Amino acid sequence: PQRARLGALVREIVAELPTRCRMLRAAGHEIQVRGHAVLVDGAARELAPAPMAILRELVRRPGVVVSRSDLLAVLPGGGSDEHAVEMAITRLRAVLGSRVVQTVVKRGYRLAYEAESAGEKYGAPRQ
Image (cartoon, rainbow, N blue to C red; front, side):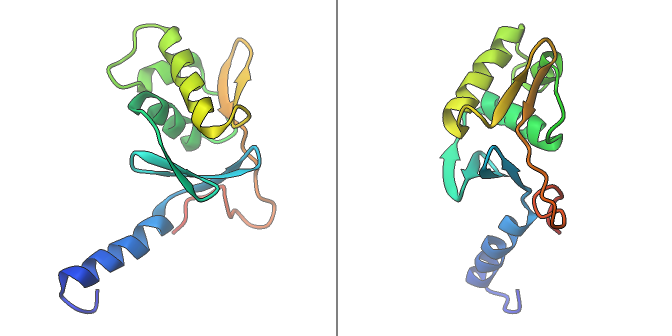
């Protein structure tokens, strides 16, 4: 900040951090992952660690099918079976809506990503 004051630093951080978060459009919703919460159409929703880990992995590869074994590997505490992934997906869908995370039979899950045709407004990280 221009002034060496704590208040100015806090205002600078509050203004800067949202611009560094990736914004995606999925199933008609704007989704932005922030810390331990996710913004869905501008409304903050908290997620437990397992669904948040799944969401981070799906957001990292929007529209790409991610296998259950890959998702299992990102779960905190290293879940022991694919049932842990299914439960995390169920909890994630309860918070985000059932259409945001798609099941691809016998392959895994993917984010219902909608690429923006006018530039990469949603697809690329903001700089």
